[in-house]
Image (tube, rainbow, N blue to C red; front, side, top):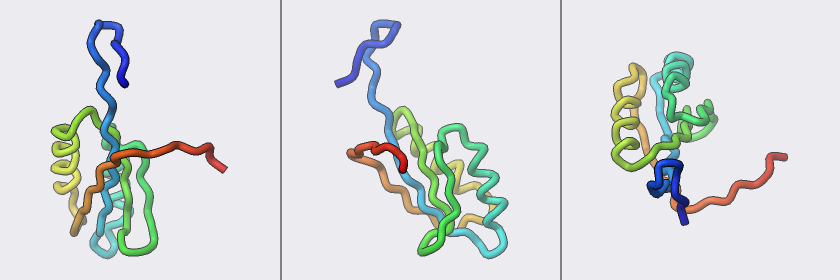
Length: 95
């Protein structure tokens, strides 16, 4: 359950999502650098496998997530994105 904030309003839980991205050949560094400029992007990773880059974002609501995905789509070099919203997770200590 959320708590009241300093203004006496309910703090709603944040929305977390992963954006999986395919990039044009030769544009990975450019796309990576542009993604790191997005304030809501908490992690940006270049990956091997089906997707070239995976971005974790934290936003206030689904409307903000929509705006972030629109911003991502405008980055030159991105071919395709797939967005997965986190429903539940547990954070474990890093090894």
